[in-house]
Amino acid sequence: MFIQYGQALGDYLYEVFVAKFDFWLAFGLVAQLLFTARFLVQWISSERAGQSVVPMAFWFFSMGGGFMTLIYGIAKREPVIILGQAMATVIYLRNIMLIVKNRGKQTQTLDR
Image (cartoon, rainbow, N blue to C red; front, side):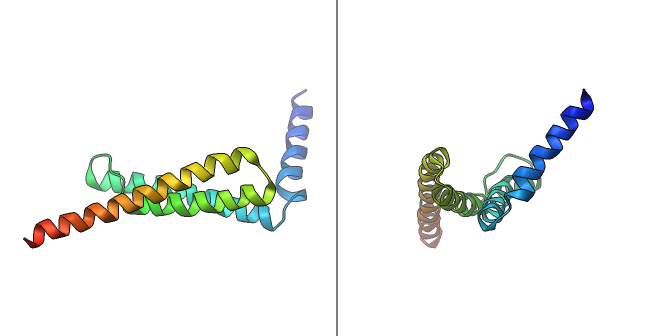
């Protein structure tokens, strides 16, 4: 029984990751790696600060990974990915804009 399940799992993984390997699968995997890297950046920054922080790099990795995942979803015609990443990408971009805007205000306050 376990041998059959193991063989079925092996066949499934082969079909998904090897037989169907093409440019878009590689692109999607890179997009997911970028998206995952944001959590590593956030974790390392938080450990260094001794508290939970969200560094600017988190938002850049979110934006890059999210946008690439959106492109992947469009190319593969995946409505769930398209809808999820389209909205998320807008949110990531807005967070970057707010951070840049507030950094400018802080600089002006320090200059006075």
